[in-house]
Image 1 (cartoon, rainbow, N blue to C red):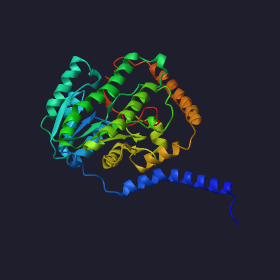
Image 2 (cartoon, helix red, strand yellow):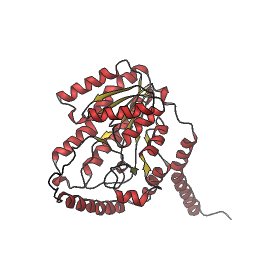
Image 3 (spheres, rainbow, N blue to C red):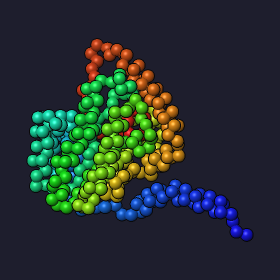
Image 4 (cartoon, rainbow, N blue to C red):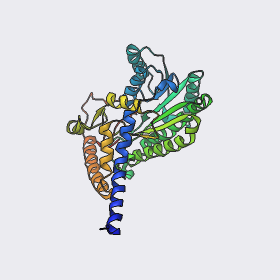
Length: 339
């Protein structure tokens, strides 16, 4: 007896839905089984921004372990010196450092720093750029409550700085016909429809996502791979202790674990969520409707706001001091959500 048309139609729709659900994990499995690219095929030197802490430091260590020479960019000369010495003790690679405050781009000081960067890489076989440096918000805030100067600095670093460093490095890659650019992003741009109270930060990372995808299309035919890498929960000082205690080890990778996997994925497509646990988080969020994400995020981040405002009312005793804010590598947000 022939099946009714409506039954065949529904069966076909169901089959297509199952295929769509399985496509992402199957593609991930195929890439996992494939041998990682030899990063030396791009060149013998790699540039890493924000390499003195968090994911940036781990990535610099991982690239040095793979035998790549390094150009390290950060705003603090002392931190750069300490990081380069730490890498040099473990790995026999050449290291150059460039002091560059990305918040000064489009200013005379920033133009001078970019000129020093171009001079530092002149004649080098630079094959890889890792744009890791970023600035996050000090806590969950409404836009009208925020210190606008902090947001201006964030936008300068996360958007303008990343763009200008990339533009400074691309010509050498184009001249050689090979290279790779890795832009470190945020799970808040691919996993959830909104990231309230961290709005400006997540919006800057959304720019990085679109910037990366467009550059991938522009330069793929010219031998240059551009990739947007998305960390979710990563065990760094930016992740709250409550989340660390609750989720590790199943969902929270260490910085070294993350960067080992991330380095292996360089050159494998325009978008990358390194690590099986990180990839699982991304897949699971896709089953949650947008309204539920919005409902959960605003309530969670309002809790963060209450904690932040309470902490600001704590009086520092005489003799106490607060550390100077620095440009740091963002591996995950202090909100305890996706980076």
